[in-house]
Amino acid sequence: MQPLEDQSPKARFLKVFGQLFPREEWPPIKLEGLLATLQFRDLESGVTILREGQVCSSVPFVLEGAIRVFKTAESGREITLYRIEKGQSCILSSGCGLGVNSFPANVVTEKATRAVFMPSEAVRGVFAEGATFRNYVLAQYASRMADVIELVEEVAFRRVDERLAQWLAEHSSSAAAGAGADGREGGRVTATHQELADHVGTSREVVSRILKDWEQRKILEISRGSLLLLPAFKSFQEGLQK
Image (cartoon, rainbow, N blue to C red):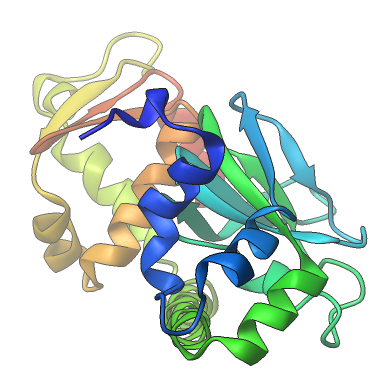
């Protein structure tokens, strides 16, 4: 099989998303017309694709890497709505032109990302004409809606982040050994995401999302079966309790 790097941009797109365009729905001539509308981009980590309030004109389909969709409060605090990874697309962007005139969140690459951008008008056409693509979009909507509902529950009712931070601080290796003079040492916690979820009374998916955010903030590092709390973790935890 030809390596992804050696393939043409169109071939790369079809390698990841080709199942959305079965031949019986998209004969070669029709599919080639769609592929001609695509824009292929290689993006570095931290690139802003769209800011809240802007008008979006295309929809990203991720081939490699990850894109984060988030809201920012006036205080500057951010909350992740969802992430778009390989084989996924942005459902909020899919709504552009269908009642979503200005984008309601920020979209930034979380790591080096290769993505394909399909014009919103083309997305609407594919959605109308292709049952397979339509089912994919609806499944993405259902999945993201479940994520957001869980996030609302977490923020509004549970304060899982505060409980999780407290549990990690109490069970880190540095806590067991005793903190240093400045109280800012890190420490290691040996536990799976599921075990942490069980300890704080939530789901593994919620814990994984919180830990991913904290890793991006550089207050801990995630390893298989364990976490390393970095020096900045203590002050972050204290801020959650205020």
